[in-house]
Image (cartoon, rainbow, N blue to C red):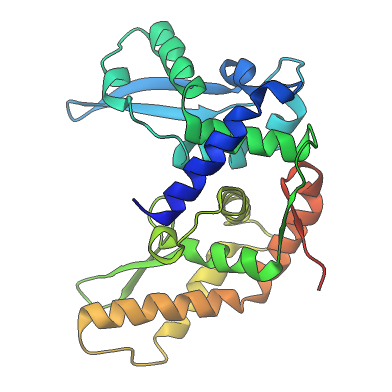
Length: 259
């Protein structure tokens, strides 16, 4: 069992023990902003789960509506999915929704992350995490991936929440930083102000200026490492992360440490 999962599991237990101390139990509101649907493709069934804006006035409505993409990331990457196959067997949409919400309410990993978010922002029963800007950059660059070389030997890049090197490079997962960085990158992937897509393409072009290897596997590995460093030094990425933090810091469970 990896250390990162053990750390999250211990945090889950501690936070679950403190549920009774909160005045806003977010589990009571999951059904207000989390939806699930079942669809088929090529004779296989899949579940689509996402966060939506809540129209109900509740203790968590403001927090949720200002963190749609962040909560969507947390739902996708910090929910155990232990009962996925059982949920897939439910064809009725209402029954599926009820069963899924019930499953979420009993998922210690997901609940620990969500309760931590609430307690560090809305409830203020826990202090916000303190992170450095280098911490943000270290995670943010991991979403800019060189995934393969095509038949012509050219680099194929992708910005993706699921296909990245975070699990391979981070011994301890950082849910809130991951969610913030990815949601910020996607928000500005093709924005006029920052356009992370353009910055990514420029960085890929830089890779061709250095011969990174004859062996394809070695070349791919070196290219990915070089991409991390190129994006870490990308001024537009830095400006974008700072801008998004300043706009949303009231609703974020961490603060940036002053230099």
